[in-house]
Length: 132
Image (cartoon, rainbow, N blue to C red; front, side, top):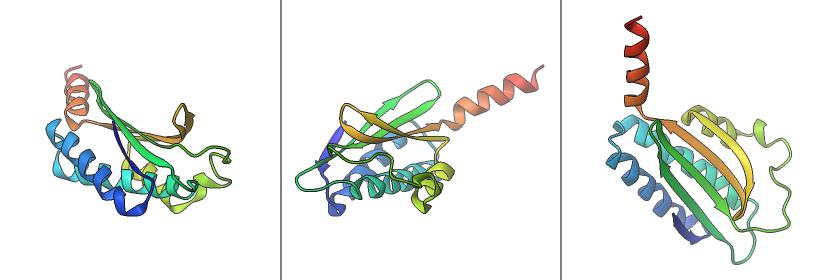
């Protein structure tokens, strides 16, 4: 888990850490770039609801299938998700770049949950299906 002040000039740290974790998990470069962009869009969406001294957090969890990321902001008393959020450009980008994207309200406040499957996990499934 990485936490930074909820300001746009700190988002690059979260993108870099995400890229480093994905690289350590042997994700291909294109997939790493997709994850970086998805985290960037998630942070932009969350920064839109943060006010004052809030903290932006990204929690990454490697799984057998790939990587789960939860970006959250500790903003309180905000409507989440925003009205028509699933029609917004950031949401469409996140949905296209990640295998799944959902709005959540967690212990840390408003959050966006992203998952990205490892190409290795899909290769295993494809090989298994091909052997039938």
